[in-house]
Image (cartoon, rainbow, N blue to C red; front, side):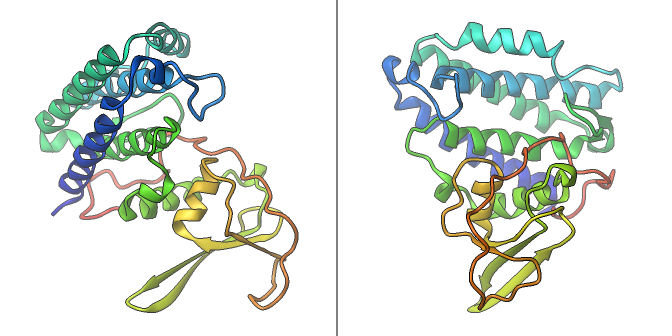
Length: 267
C-alpha cells in the first residue's frame, strides 16, 4: 500500500473516532472549556472543521495550478472560529461531518500527478500536496486530545506517534531549544532500541518512549515518566534536575526537503 492510501486510511479512522467523541457531547459540554487556553470545545470543533475547508483550498491549488491560499487571512480564520464556537452540539457535529467529507472527496478526486504539486500553508515551508493528509491527521489527532472529552495521548495510534514525533524532531526549533539531545526508546520484538537525536540546542538530554515524548513535545502532557540526564551522562547516573518545558511546537507547516513524488511510506 503506497503512502497516499495509507494516510487516507488512517485519516478516515481518525475522523471516525473524532466524530464519535463529538456526537456524545451535549450543548452544555460543547460550551465548556477545552484544554486550549481561552477556547471552549466549540472553538476547537469549529477550528477542525474550518481547517478541513482550508485544506480543500490547497487541494484545489494542487489540482489547478492556480495559487489558492489556505485561508484568506489569519484574521478571517480567527473570526470564523469565534463566530462558530457557540453553535449547539448538533450543528457543530454536522459541520464537522460535512467539512471532513468535502476534504475526503477532494483527496480522492485529486489526479495522481497533482499530488506532486507544491502548495503552501500559513507557515513555511512550501511542500508537496501529498503531505496534506499528514497535516490533517495532525489536526484531528492533536485537537481530539484538546477537546478534553475522554480521548488522550494514550489513544494515539502507534503510526501517528512515530510519524508526528519524527516530524517534530526534524523541525525542532534549535534556537529556542531547552535540550541538547532526545533519546527515543522503544521495544521491538522483545528487544530494546534507541534512536538519538543530537545537536538540538543547549540543555540536558531527555530520554523516554515515543508516546510520552510526543505528548511533552506538543505540550499536551507534562512529560511524566521522561528522564532528564546531563549531556554525556549514561543511563545509570542520577537525573539532571526537573524536566524543562519543551520549546514551541509546530513552528513549520511541513518538514523541509520532502520528496516531490509521494514515497512508498513516510517517514
